[in-house]
Length: 291
Image 1 (cartoon, helix red, strand yellow):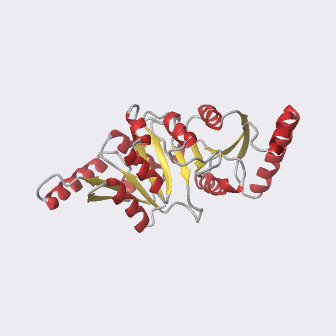
Image 2 (cartoon, rainbow, N blue to C red; image 1 turned 90 degrees about the horizontal axis):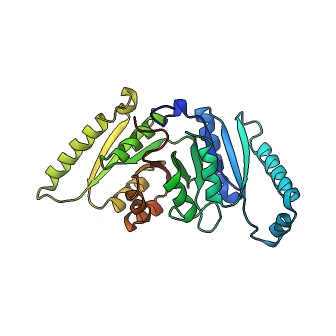
């Protein structure tokens, strides 16, 4: 296992989907990334307890009903990926969605897990909803939460940094996955000093040093730009993402108990829910490690 999660050695992607229209965006992004990285794509569908009368009839039909569902899913996947030139591996599981994703991901160490968000549906609670929240808490690999339509590869990437080990891992992950893309290392500092200009210059120098000490490849380092602003992180960061057409925001997650605070605290709730771009959550202590 490499000491970093990096795309040249990325073994594959795991997409969690129910193959409905609400999962189209994560599916299209997973297809694009699998092609870009030239890695297999495992597609997981989960058979939960029935939600509507038609599903009840299938559920009462036992194994025969599940076989029909799996056959239908395989047929749909075959049509979806026909001519795509990708290695696609259908996977099926039953029970709770988050349990099934975690169990499947554990059997695929190093895989990037891809899912989406929605306000109501099973696979897509809000970013702080039970499924995505539990995945972020327990996955041993990064989690990509897809929001936007796919209009090509990610062009611009932002990494939120506070110069902590979690931010270091997030920046290294982004730089190794996308070494030829523009990456913004964004840092917000409070106006604690009397001279905001001097404080900003000090913060800028600190972030530049932090980037230099992350051990990025020279080519990737040249594409990283430090952006420092004074004020509240939530408002500044979400505005920067919107105004600068950021495609992907990368956030490092602290280990427990800080992770619980990060995911459930009001500050991060506003930050994550207000993002209009896709979000890559990189957990501390992940299987890819931090070297």
